[in-house]
Image (cartoon, rainbow, N blue to C red; front, side):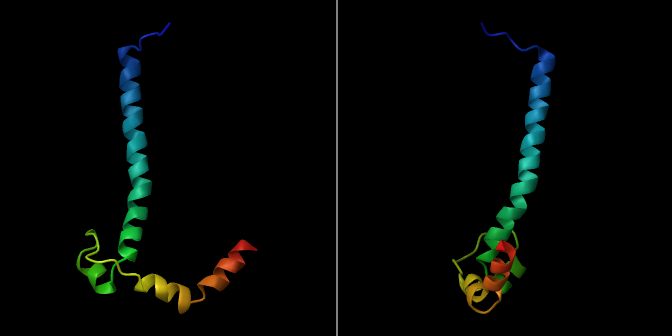
Length: 79
């Protein structure tokens, strides 16, 4: 037998869901922006930070994995 929720409980559930969605957006939006901007050139990221990349640019990742100490830092953090 299902018990109907009262108006007070419905209002609380509504505001709780709004707060949870807001918190989720606060966490995921910056991560999304970092991911999107990692595929842009430096000039393209400077022109419009919030736009999607005009083309997929993997140069940033190529430089990260070949010309930096990324693997050393990763190995040190896993010890």
